[in-house]
Each structure stands twice: as structure tokens, then as C-alpha cells.
Length: 302
Length: 281
Image 1 (cartoon, rainbow over the protein chains, first blue to last red):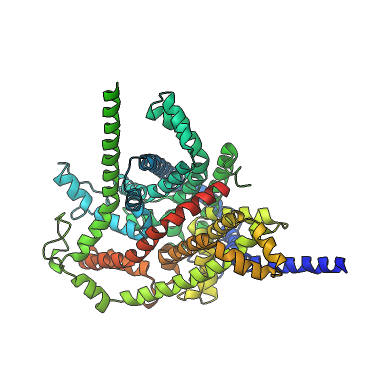
Image 2: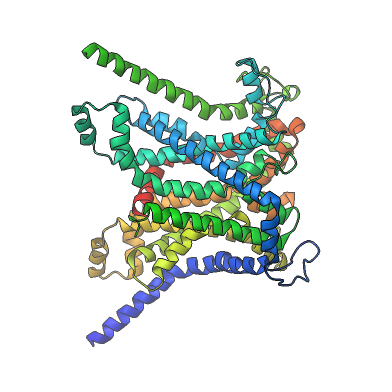
């Protein structure tokens, strides 16, 4: 009898678990796993504007075409620069502001925090479109500011390749630092005050205190955020796409993800775009595995 | 010595406030530009003035936007899509997160890391195959496809979030409920679910924002301006710099104010939710 009730208890628990997980599993399988498989097939196919319905699996030639595309290497390099520059600025500005804000004497902390989180709260596409307006050569606020107050000559932000890329990076730095600041603020709260008091007794300078107390204790909190930040930034199509208006000038302002979006939905090179998507994914996946192993950032998670 | 230290301290205080003021100004400036441009009268759209309140400020852009464009229609569309995504997202993530937090089963680790891996997919990875499928199923230009894609996009983060939060709720509560004769569902619904309110708020906010702010997927799936969501509509205004810049600014402001307010009010929860997620995984 006891055995029976245990048995039915177990069955009930299994059914309940099934009920809890099934909706998510079904949805993820349908909208993530299935398209992923289909993408693998597409990447091995010749599907494009001329072969929309009568496409065939043709082997790895799309992958060969990706690596033979000279622009691929150039844009890969740009994507790495884009990601690196953004993350460095996000982390440095974010941690710096968090440390300043965390000091005891700062009054009105909630108000400062609200003001500084604003760039994160604003919808990303509005940020991008608004900054595009601000970078306008004749009427944009940036050129007006630098000509009126700094006596510099106006910059062709959106019409020269280097400047357009810089404009996209500036926009993304602006919208990304609050995330790192928020994470760092959370981490700072968990550092016991006694450690700083001990450092004060030793007569440590603020700089020393930062490197010897704050930095090592912030590291475990910041690392997962940095990995997430790198993945998000590497794949952030919104800012580049909208600030440069689909890669202007002349498709020279791209990172990989905007380049592949254009190839897919403006040039309809489906097979080629699917292959490039796979390449981007493998790059990110490999990077994150190496990074995770190196830093053991998920130790706490498992 | 004392004097010197005091001077240093004072310097630190002044420096801190100076930096905070500069960064706060940088944060606010682009928003203030949107306000300015939205208030400009029609003849001053191409102005080189940097004044915050423009000469002859008027609300004409807002009136025009609300009465003579499809703005309200787009807002309704966006609200509909976002609410459906939020409700589904909360329902799915709160249950799946609970299952992953409380039960041991084969494939649990794989499921958790599988969810993380989806974050590394470039936008086109799923969008392109889904686009091909949606064409086949005649679901282009419909909200069904878009709602499903948004929900699935927001889910991985939300499930992890919820799981992390449930992990901090002691088992003892469930055992007590069991002893009182509650079924697993009652235990979850009446005891644990209400306790997870802060995490649910984050999940709801994140799901809502995912749908409300999404441009790239909508741009591919929705082609009829009647069906546009707000991001597509606003992009259309912004496209023609000369004529509709004021409309774009007015619209952006109306779109942003509610989500920004919500975000700022909930940022306290957000901070604890995120760091919890970061520390606990």
C-alpha cells in the first residue's frame, strides 16, 4: 500500500514537472531548435532570389563563399573593434561612476542613479534614430556644439566611413554604460565596509584601495555581465543599422550581424546569409567557451 | 597634515560631484533634444538653434501626430503585441523557472545551458529560417508570428531570472504547505508564486520591453503600414528628415515616457534581480 502511494506520488510529481516545463520546451523547440536546424540546411543550400522555391542542398560552397568574400574579413575586424571599444568604455565608465556614487558623502543617490540609468531606459531604436539626427551635418546638435563652443570645423559624421563607424560607437557607448554601472553598484553593496576601514588604517590611497579591495571583489560580479555584454554588443544590430541607415555610406558601416541582415533581407542571398549566420554563431560560441574556461566565471552558477 | 588631508577630501568631494554632473548632463542631453525638436513650430524644423525651449514653442506636432497620422493605430498594435508577449512570458517563465529550480531530472543541465546558448545567435540565425517558414504558412503580415518570436526571444533570460530567484526561497515553505495537504499546484500558486513577486516584475518588464522596443524582426515580418508597430512607424517619420522630424520627436517622446518611467520606478528591483542572476546564475 505504501509502495503504491509512493509510486503514484512520484507519478504525480512527474506530471506536474511536465506541466511546468512543457510550454517553454515546446515553444523553444519550435521557434529556436527547429529554425536552427533549418538554418543549417539553408546554409548548405543555394537558396537565393533566383532559387526561392526550387532550391537544393549543394554542400559547403556557401561557407567557402563566405570566407572568400574580402569584405567578410574586413567586417570581422570591424566587429571585433566595435565590441572591444564598446565594452572597455562601458566597463570603465560604469565601474567609475558606480564607485563615485557609492561614496558615503554623496547625497541624493536615488536621483543620481535615475539620471544615469536614463540611457538604458530609453528604447534602443529611439536612441539610435535620435543620435542619427544629432549627427546630421548641418542641423545636428553635435556639429553645432563643436562649431559653436569648441571652434572646430564640422565633421561629416554620416557620410564618411570612419566617422560613421565612430558615430555608431559613440551612440552605443552612451546607451551601454548604465548596465555596467548598475551591476557594479550591486557588487559594491556586497563589499564589507570593514575592508575599507582596514585599508584606511594602513594608510592606503584611494587608488590602492580600488585595485586591492574593490577590483578583486567586483570581479566575480562583473565577469558574467562582461560576457553577456560582449555577446550582446557583438550581435547588436539596432545601433549600427539605424545610426548608419542600413550601412551608409556605401555599405561601409557594418558589423557582421548588420551585414548578414542586409544580405538576407535586402539582397535575398538566403543560403549565403545562413552560412554567415552559422559562422558568427560559431565565433561567439567558441569565444564564450574559452572565456568561461579561462575565468571560471560560471563557477558560482553550477 | 590634518589640513592637507581635509583639502584632499574636499577635492575628492568637488571632483565627484563634477564628474556626476557631467555624466548626468550627457545622459539627459539627447532626451532634451527630442523635447526641443518636438516643440518646434513647423517653420523652424531646420534650425541651428541649441536653445532648449525653441522660439515660438508649440504643441502642433503632437496634435498633428495624434489626429492626422496612424500613430494611435501603431500604438494600439504595439500595446496588443506587448501585452500578449508579457502575459505569455510571465506564465511560461514562472512555471519553467520553478521546475528548473525545484526538480532534478535528466537533461536539466543541458536545458539550462541550451537556453544560454540561444543568446549567442545572431538576429538572422532564427529570423531567416522563420521568415521562410512564415512565408510558407502565410503568416507574414500577421501578429501571430511576431508574438511567438518575441516570446521565445525573451524567454531564456526570463527563465534563468526566475530560476535564480526561486533558488533563494527556502524549501521549508513548500514542505509546510505539503503537510497542510496542499497539492503541488496549490503550493506553487498560493505560496511560492506570490513570494516571487519581485522576479515576476522583472520578467514582465523585460518581456514587455522586448516587444515594445523591437525593430529588426518587425521590419521583416510586418509590411503593411496598418499593421506597423511603433518602432516601424517612427522610423518611417525619421526617414524623411525635412518634413517629419518634428513628428518623429513628438512620437518618440510619447512612446518613451511610459516605458522610461516604468523602468526607472522598477530599477530598484532590476538591480537586485540582475545581481542575483549574476551571482547565483
